Amino acid sequence: MKVLKRLFAVAAAAACAIPIAAAFSGCKATQRYTAVYSDGELIGYELDVSGYKDKLKGDYEIPAVYDGDEGSAPVISIADQAFAGSKITSLTIPATVKDIGIAAFAYTSLKSVTFADGIQIEEIPQGAFSYCASLETVTIPESVKILGYFSFMACESLKSIDIPAQVTEIRDRAFENCLNLATATMHDGLKTIGSEAFYGCGLTEVTVPATVEDVEGVPRTDENGKVIRDADGNVQTFTKYGIGVAAFHTCEKLERATVLGSVKTVPAGAFGYCPALKEIYLPASVKEVQGAYYSGSKVVVGHAFHNCKQLTDVYFGGTSEEWSGVKIDMGGKDQDMATYDNAAIKNATLHPEAQGLPARAE
Image: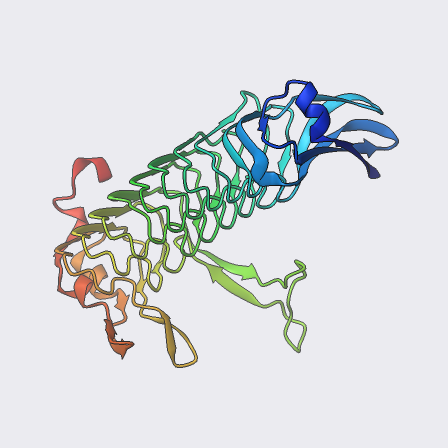
C-alpha cells in the first residue's frame, strides 16, 4: 500500500476571522494539514502546528473532519511535537484519530485531556504528554495497548490514573516524577512494568497484577529493530523483567506493595529508597532479590530494597523453606556518602504462605 502526504497550511490570520476551537493570541500560530493518500485515494489528514506555538491558548478541540483543497476527510493523525510548548489548557481528541506523534503535547499547559468515545489508538507514544505539569485528569482509552517511554513523565499535578486491562506494557519512565500521583490502578492483562516507570511518584500503595511476568529468551535488537547475533551467528537473548529496574524507586510515600505476578526476579532498585514502605507481598515464584546495578565500578541504582528503613513485614506466597532458597544479594556498597544493601528485607519479619496477608491481596 503506497501512502502519500500533501501539505496544506491554514494561516492563523484566517483563523482570526473564522472561529475555531482554540484561542489564538497575536495570530502567530499556523495549523497545517497534510493530506494522506493510500493507493491514490485521500484517506485523511495529519494535523501539525508551526510558528509561535506559545500563542496557542485555551481549550482546543481537534476537528474530526477537515475540508481541504483536495477534499473533505477525517483527521487521522497528530504530527510529532505538533502542539509541544503551546499554552492549550484542555484538549479533545476525536475518534477519527488513529495515531499520535512523539511528544505531540509535551510541555503544554494542559489540565485535562478527553479522548472521544470509540477512539482506536493503540499506543500513547514516547513523550506524548511529558512535562505537562498542570495535567490533572486523563482517561486512557480502552483501545490502548502500550504506554510509551516517558509518555506522562513529570506530570506533577496528576493524582490518579486507571490503566485499562488492554494495556500490556508500561514502558520505561512512563510516569517518572509524577510527584503527586497517589494512585495507579493496574489490571490483569498487564505484562510488563518498565524500568523507572513510576520512579519518584507519590504512590502510597501499589498492586502489581497477577499477569505481570518475567520473559526469558527475548531476542536482543539494535536501534533499528534488527536482531543481534554473536560471532557464531547465534541470536543474543535476555530476560525481560516483569518489574523493571528501579520501577518504584524513590516512591517516598509508598507504604504497601503487593506483587501478585509470577515474577522470578525483584530487580535492582525496584523498591529502593522507599523509606515509608512497611509491608510487601511477594509471590512464591520469586527466586532472586537483586543487589545494585553497576556501570563499571559505579552504582547506577542501588539494591532492590535499599534504604527501606520502615520495612517490617514480608508476606511470601511460598513456605519458609522456599524463602530460604531465594537468592537475596546481601553485598553492601558505600558510594557518594550513601549505603546500598538489602538489609531491610532480610531483617523484616517473614510471614510464609502469606500468613496474615490482608484480604485484598489474597
